[in-house]
Image 1 (cartoon, rainbow over the protein chains, first blue to last red):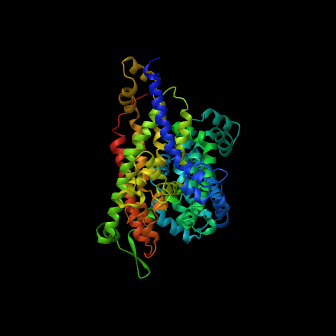
Image 2 (image 1 turned 90 degrees about the vertical axis):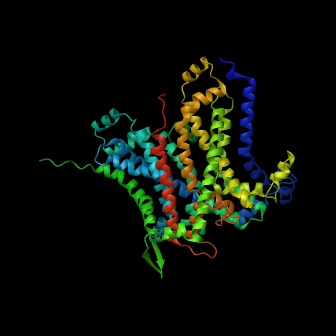
Image 3 (image 1 turned 120 degrees about the vertical axis):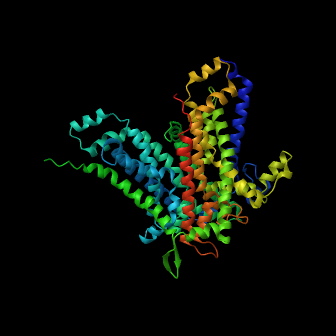
Length: 279
Length: 304
């Protein structure tokens, strides 16, 4: 092979640059995590040292557990994320199937109408959304959030899923029809299982922005019993600004679930992005 | 005569999605634009036409805030275009190098900040840059640059740029991934043909790969534009609704939030908030149309 491509100095430089950037990317997370396990004095005196037997302290976590209802926040975030994802996937797949499978008048137009929402952020409509949620009594319920995130996620979901559904073989579906399957059975039993990888991609794409959103929880559901983890940690940290142990522990507790999710789904996420699902 | 068979299943498949999308997204969007044309006078909603927009653009008190937020927003976007996207492309170019070891590991690690929430990112950087904790000054001290340190987030002249850089740090993973995917899809034969003609290394990047990934760079630019012009969370998490110091980090998202929700002594005004949302909508629409009709159609695409 060509020598320019396997030059050892080049390789070393490339690794050097990538390692440097990886350190920049991970450093803040690392500093927060190690300091959350240290006593207040050590946080300030040796911020970069790992916690050891002498400096180890869980006092921050104790404050967080006592003062903030983090389990409730976590549960709320979980319900909202899972609820929205379920609706996005089910309703999105159904609409995508209708658009990709049947020819009917207005098909193109309907596709374009649904695609509008890919580029226009739903936040622009916040004033009217709040007004509507107040009018219907949904404000300060998790349903308000689930509905908003579902509406936000549907356009891209329909777009991606209908691309994939066009690739499902017609012969298979027609064979099902000859065997007397209803259109519903064809969708649920034949098509859905075949587009499962695309569904996973859509789920992972939507999961992170929903879990991390601050805007809609802040506006639609700021009550104590409906706070999501993101909003809960924001409020908690705002109240405990001067208690560094508590702030660092709250941050770490907010980081952990996301990191765990990322470790589980990173392969799916990266495959989804790199397979060109968003092109 | 035979009536056309009504295919009910199509309606059953389509209706739920269209219903939720229309009522929760499209209808409020237009309703917000409509609300921008009203104002509250003596507890009653009255139609005032474009009066709110006139206030927003020309009234001394409002317009100063609006143009400040808009200018800041453009600066925020510019930093992303000048730093985030080039760094993302450079990282992707390194990662896509054939036979680079640990590529998957680097890729996953560099993407981690992107999955964290703004609240975490905002506070984490606030702590690290804080002069009280002193991580940033002592690290600069270690390389002999302590004199460069300033409380970046607290100084009017640096705060916005600092926040933009934090946002770049968080989101560099997205251009990296998209460009990485585009680079991988370039067929090996083209690169080998270049090698035979003596085009290798950096030259191959500039002359062969970069022209081929231009469409992806276009997509990243428009995604960045839309993302930046409805940004809110990071500024709110790090600087609060007042976007301090002295509104120097105020962007359209925080301005709209303050206006429509109210803060401290100012009462919330949904109609002025809607007017700001209308302005944001127009800006995003112009950007998207420029991209779709001005850039995307003119870009040369190569059949790979």
